[in-house]
Amino acid sequence: MIPLPKDLDPYANPRAFYGAELRRLREAAGLSQNELGERVFCSGTYIGLFEAAERRPQAEISRALDELLGSGEHLQRLCRLARTSKVAGYFADAAELQQRAVSIAEYSSMVIPGLLQTESYARALTRAAHPYSSGEIIDGHVRTRMERGSLLDSPTPPVLWVIVHEAALRVPVGGDAVIAEQLDHLHTQGSTRPRVVIQVLPFSAGANPLLDTAVTLMHFADAPPAAYTESAYSGELVEDTALVEHISSAYDLARASALSPEASLSLIRSAAKGHATDAHLP
Image (cartoon, rainbow, N blue to C red):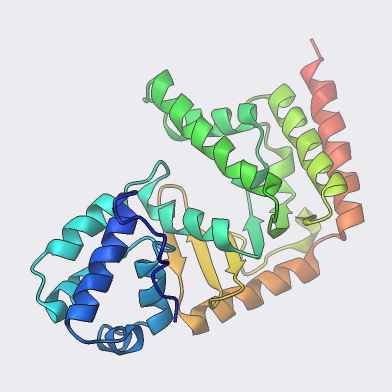
């Protein structure tokens, strides 16, 4: 179990207040974290993470907690406050989990994963995804994505293993100059950061189980692994053990079909040079 830290200020932010209120209601009901977890079909560790403000509260669990603890809609209202995020709502839980992960494995079929994107590339993708949004809104999305990339500069960054399909190297997102800069950056990250491993899945590999999706697998020091799958305008956090294992097996198959890290970096460098040459053609 993870108890509420004694120095946690319940008024520091909505998530901390949610955790403090959950703990207050649980103790008033005379329940341990494990006992409460069993009654709402989650683990005691999960309850402890909510109380410690280490996890964003979940709407369904908050509803079950209110019903069990007789707290009306108190936790559900606090949940809505605590779940505010600068990233898309469907990605918010996964973005938070990335901050706690000891290792992250990503597969992307058409774009460079967010943690390794340059600002110009991220802006081109964001503008394409939100063609009718104002420049201010686009700037906000790009700024948030760049802030996420700072995870790799933390004192204890996760091991990041990335598989990108060769298609992601060929599509001139933002034009040849922008994609050339992005691929140069990708090559630099893979060749200078010892905790970043990059592989390319070549066209010659043919079909694979993850071909039409984007996947992130996250492993933690103190919790079971989780996965996140994403399509154009939606995503899903997966915590069911059997399904996470299934996704992990599919990832392993893609990794086995991908080029070695060394060959991948060579292909990335070659693709970057090709785009740079095209950018200077009249």
